[in-house]
Length: 474
Ligand code: SAH
Ligand code: SF4
Ligand code: F3S
Image (cartoon, rainbow, N blue to C red):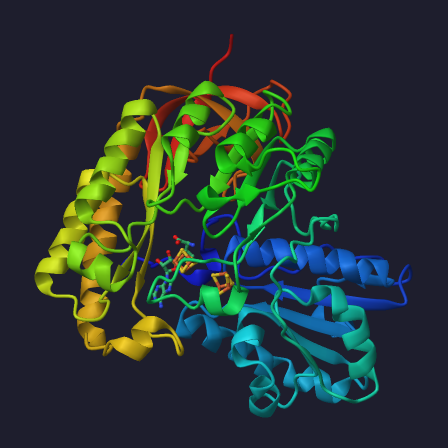
């Protein structure tokens, strides 16, 4: 069986198992923290905000949990399995807690928000439970926990965006960075826990977004990915009373920072991505030709139950429109197998829409019922696990075919590639991406290059996941 994409990799193949950040010099700080992140890129971005808040309190980051005075897990609730992974990890910290007096263990993020103080009853070694909108109160909560009390803050906010906090870039490659532009989600997809764990949607001040992106560019970064659960509903009204700014306008402002700065974004809800966004992309060659456009299901009936608010035909028309305005645009998707009541015919519709959309890449999951969601309250989780898994395997098989086909069609083409670093398998080769977000690997030559450089690479061969090429010399 093919490896399935897990939540750990969601939205960024580069992100590893949960990361431990850079190690600070233990002598430089009085106290050290260790943080591990799970889930989507937004959670990873939040950990960088948390690191900034802790650094201001004199905490240094360490990669080694046994060195830390504070261990934090930034958690995800999207699927049952994501929560199990965190619980397992927590039990691994039990021994450390026994050995080190005063060690504090905190749970942050979506699982903290979902379970609230129940977490403290279920997992006795946890000292702190902090929801995604309460990170500014971490210093007080840590003090409280230090006195032996359990500390909890899971209040959700209508306006918190951490706009003024400069994230500490943990485990970054120095070339590409993620920038949160909004928080929360107002869509109510029936399968999804996010609206409950992240609260109402709110957009971040565009001037602080532009400030962060310009700063990254000046520090040598060459790619920013604007993050939100539904970026196309970005909407910010500056206090000065000037006109409000939508996502297309924000994209343009970020793209104007420099033609040398690539701009990406994620995620687009198919119902919200506008022609204005597509036209803006077409006008700026540094806005990458790549859209993550999660379909979830190819069956109109299932889409309706999922509350996705578009039909199969509407989605297909959106794909047509993207390719009409941006003929070389890469498209990827998220797909759920075995949602409530899904028939074999519905499943075939999903395989069919994948072929129609010719996704370069997909994140594929089987349905996992989440407590409190609309689907859990309204529909029975009635597809047997064996059927879910079988369908998922078929979805993965179709995606593998499509990915290979898409890569084969690139053989012979020349792409502009932004170098990110050494190839994982071979330090005599560089790894980078083209505008479509495909990974290219090519041998180093005598030409002196470094991460952050743009080069022209000709594709000579491919695997399902990677384009293999050679440097084009002028
Ligand atoms: N805001 C993004 C998705 C965020 S969650 C969007 O609307 O596209 C990332 C993906 O996890 C979703 O696109 C969906 O495919 C998957 N997912 C969410 N809830 C799930 C569940 N209960 N079971 C299985 N997969 C789920
Ligand atoms: Fe979840 Fe839907 Fe919001 Fe995405 S748009 S986070 S799937 S509710
Ligand atoms: Fe998971 Fe929360 Fe993101 S549930 S996918 S970490 S918003």
